[in-house]
Amino acid sequence: MSAYEALAFSYDGLTQDIPYEQMLSYMEALLQRHGKRPETVLDLACGTGSMSVLMAKKGYRVLAADLSEDMLSMAWEKAAELEENRPYFICQPMEELQLPYQVDLIVCCLDSLNYVTDPEDCRQALQRCFEALKPGGVLIFDINSKEKLMGLDGQVFLDENEDTYCVWRAEFDREENICYYGMDIFQREEDVWLRSFEEHAEYAYDVQQLRGYLAQAGFEVVEIYGDRIMEAPAPGEQRIYFYAQKG
Image (cartoon, rainbow, N blue to C red):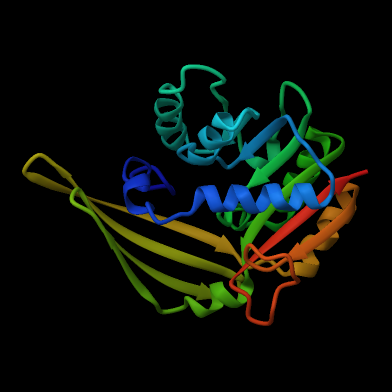
């Protein structure tokens, strides 16, 4: 089963600890640091739309794109609760991104870029982001660092709530430079537990590799930060943020 086909319907319940508001506050602090006041924004790889809805509530005009129809279905239901300023959802892969209009800001959260496991597709995705931004527009994204993904090799994790039990095992393939997650998912339907399996994969991008792709795309300002701090990543940093600005 492809990534997020079964997990989409349990994703929010298993990820209640994700600090969306703190993430948005951090990204807004980065924007303020550079004197940016965006009005239109693309939430790229929006998943179930938690960040999309949060940004819409704060007054941003939001486009939201994701590859998974199942995740977008959950996002649409969440956004339907808004009385006004609902996000507009698009089903597209990053490397084929095409928006109806250019935006001031693109955010891509929760290591979504790592899920683009072909470096050429990643380079193309960043090029598409550049083209989707207005002059002076900003791209902010985060990645799982290579050190983190390599360190997950052989680890086994458990996530559960009342309706879902998920066991996932990580294996890092050094030849492919990819961390694979095999997920066994048990979801309750009344008195029956249904089992499904998904495989997720994340490419371990090097910081300098992504710097190069951003420069090739045309971004003139590229800054790199540690996990929600205003400083460069420390050695062994687990999550790294990129700020890229179109000239």
